[in-house]
Length: 88
Image (tube, rainbow, N blue to C red; front, side):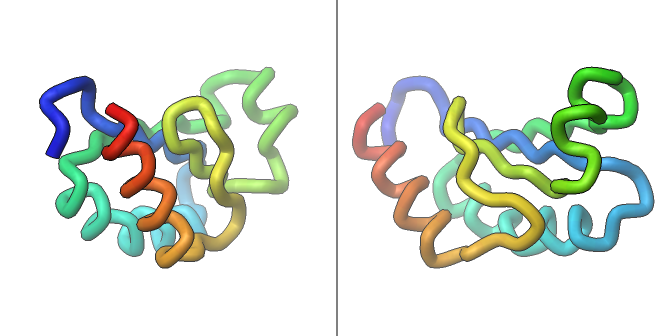
């Protein structure tokens, strides 16, 4: 693994969102595999985020790049995280 900054995955979510819970469970092994950090952001605590993502949660960012919404393609996310780890 890189000795630089960790890979950051941001999960835009809300309470009582089964797709959000599912996405978090699916990406948890990738977080461990790549030593990545998960940041969860509750969109309902920020009116601007709620307006932007209200019907799209979960939304997943890898760094500053949006990589998924609603459902996670784990194979694709793994490739994206591998590229991010190499570029560190």
